[in-house]
Every structure is written in structure tokens, then in C-alpha cells.
Image 1 (cartoon, rainbow, N blue to C red):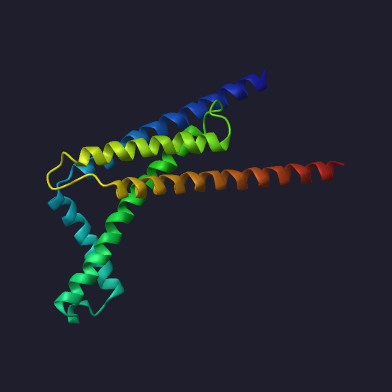
Image 2 (image 1 turned 90 degrees about the vertical axis):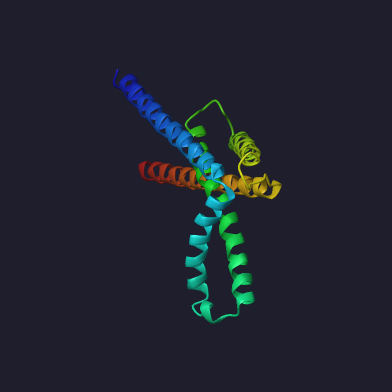
Length: 182
């Protein structure tokens, strides 16, 4: 009988984890939608603030550069900030979706989990870029979908790596216990 109660307890924990992850996924998707809903001016304002901070770190003598050099450096850093933002948004989403899908046994092998999750990530990235086509001053970019998909995929690979490490350690621990008993 204790085994049955333990199974119910474990199922309850898994259900709780699923519910939390599902809510976090929805919240993060809404957050991404919010970033995509910002007009070009609003979006530039946010990324420019971040860019200014980074420029001051990497080039302390920024104000002493010529206007042309300042503009060139600022634009390069701004591009990186924007694309890193895309990558990061979808990496977080990938971690959440990957974690959620790992709570299900029916999905099967790791590769299918990655493909299923990545398909979801790409679909959301495509719809996000499509949505940007309706926002003032913004336009959909195939490059951004690719960056989003790579961020999502990297996060999924990170989850699989952690799980693989955990499984190897668990297996080694069980083997050590069996060797001690023998």
C-alpha cells in the first residue's frame, strides 16, 4: 500500500510541476508578444539604453571617438544587442517548453522531444515575426526566425545534456551500490 501512495504523491508533484511550467510558458509567450508589439521607436529606445551601457563598457573613451566612429560602433553593438535579445527570449522559452515536455512519458525518445519542441519554437517564432508585420515601423525578418530557432534549440540541447549527465551519475551510483553489496 505505501507504494501506491508514493505513486499518487509523485503523480501529484509531476502535475504541479506541469501546471507551473505551463503557466510560465504562457507568461513568457505573452512577454515575447509584448516585446513584438512595441513600435519601432519603443523597441529602439529599449535596445538603445542597453546598447549605451555596453558601449561604455567596451569603449570607455567612446566620447573621444569621431562621430563616424561612434555611430559605427554603436550600430554594431546595437545589432548584437537586438539579435542577442531574440536569441535569449527564445532560449528561455526553449528551457520552459523542454522542461514541460520532459514531464511526459508519452513523447518518447530524446530526439523526438527535441524535434517536437523545436517545431513548436519555430512555429511561435514565425507567428511572432508575422505579428511584427502589423506593428508600426516593424517588419518580419527571416533572420530573426532563424536566430529565435537557434536560441530555442540551444536551450533544448542544454536540457538534454543535463538529463544525460544526471542519468549517467544515477547509473554510476547504482552500480557502485551494487558493487558494495556484492
